[in-house]
Length: 122
Length: 106
Image 1 (cartoon, helix red, strand yellow):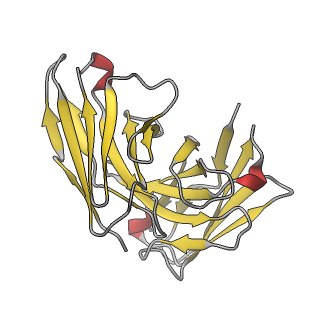
Image 2 (tube, helix red, strand yellow):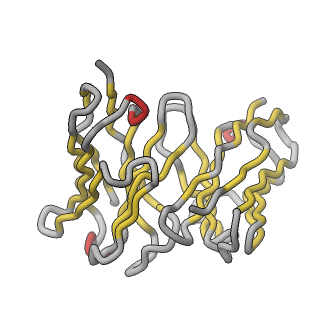
């Protein structure tokens, strides 16, 4: 059974940093792209960042470029999102999601975690 | 970045109705389009990938069509369980982008 479990969310002041983690299980982690998607309270979905299976292709939404960094660790079956210079508008539920196509960055996200809540407030 | 324009933003319908939701991409994305359903407090659920491929376990009343810039999600006969939010996603290029969402209500 595929499982994605996010952690690391919490309350943080503007300008501070936070690191999110997502542990994956139930599939061959190395074969798939992984993504972070966020959802502000009462709002729609926003793609934040994605990373290919070999870490050769990484992308960011314009809203987080230069502040957030995605990474993945094969040994830990995990992806991470280092979030620096946080702003109040970064407040959201952050989901980890798995790409659906082996060896490709393109493709829908077929499994999602339950999310970890990040609140940026003074 | 590719912009995804989804319409309508909200839709009132009844059980048994046929409904359509559209997404328009700001440039050609071939068939790199997915549809998701999201219920309150839950993670999104993948319904359709590659514009028209129904995911395993998704009822056949859901269908997707389109290519290039114009895409449609159709629910042929609404069931009570279908009242939810729906989002499109273009997964053609980074940055991936979602449509604004459609809230389907009774």
